[in-house]
Image (cartoon, rainbow, N blue to C red; front, side, top):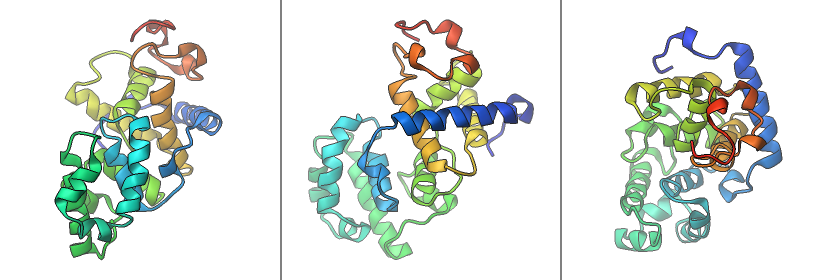
Length: 231
């Protein structure tokens, strides 16, 4: 677990309440997205890389097109890099397709065309950071692994911290520790997907939907976030 005093973490009853509330919300409100209907590690990887700095509605058509053209790590590994970059357009941030291509080639050369399931090996790939490794482990392999993207960090900061600079290095470490402490032993897939959806649709950056939020009683930022106002 990332460094954080145990006394600073939410008490077990608070963690349980947060998990139950989030899971209940997600099962009623979670978005139906194609990468949530698969446990294929490659498909999960593609979706996570595409979603970096890109909205879901822009990713959806490209996700399907990409997997039709490169249905496996082997297919991507043998493709021409120029074709790979061209297929990626117009998503932008074009280092991403080259990184995917390199990951595919390394997976074929070293791991038999499969993505490994352990954190250390995943992190050894250039282009797979802590968040993407956690997403692959939890969504593809069902492991108890934490995630922390922009949406998740916002939710955890607002609910459990409420003051300070959410972008500071020390705060980032604290939010990772929170995420690791909160992730349940069961229903990890739903919990992590729920965290992302909750930050994307309710606990949004501007004009958070506090009147529709089931977390208000435990949220340390609620008194500062009046409905309809920016955070």
